[in-house]
Image 1: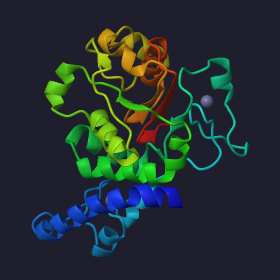
Image 2: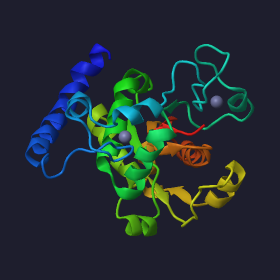
Image 3: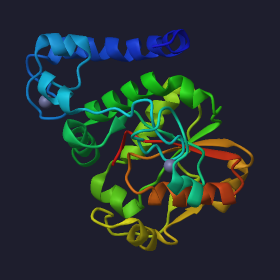
Image 4: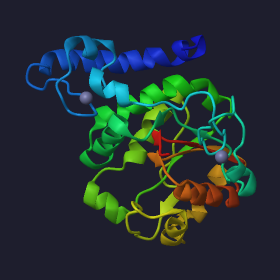
Length: 262
Ligand SMILES: [Zn+2]
Ligand SMILES: [Zn+2]
């Protein structure tokens, strides 16, 4: 952890932690803290340490590491450090960089799923906070002006009564002290779930389903946008949204996700 991050961010996280701990002490007997991966009760030592995962789940959590493509984030084998992958050279992405710390899979996959579909806010907050702790300098190097979440269609929002990406975007806005807008990028067409579709099918499924509100275009003119999504799988959604933001005048787009699939 670097000093810059500690000074500016840890105090805020500590305030959150302080409140959480006090509430936790009070309600800990009634609502014991559970592992965000497998829901087993957490030992006191794990809870005091960092919370989140139990010792068994922790083993299955994989991180990005140091050897990867800086644009799409794919991990390299046999290449050291950051170098743009052949896929990103062949088909340049409309975003500059993917920020992620964790790989989607094992207990992390379960935690992200429980955040997205069971509204497990502890899981979402834990993964987002731990990701930013690791990515803080990397993100600020791109001087984001504005945070924008990938939107949900309002019908999906009505069904779930929760937008995971809006929740992560608001957390990032608090930690990084960067404003967030929920009304710039819109999901204007209801689409079927993307699970099980390949990149081509996803692009077809998503065609014309997002737009940038014409009234809000001036807000992104020449700005560096930090686009927020929950998971990066084929990059179809991220590419569509980033492309739209660029076409609507954004200066640059970077992308933050809780986890990347492989
Ligand atoms: Zn566990
Ligand atoms: Zn790449």
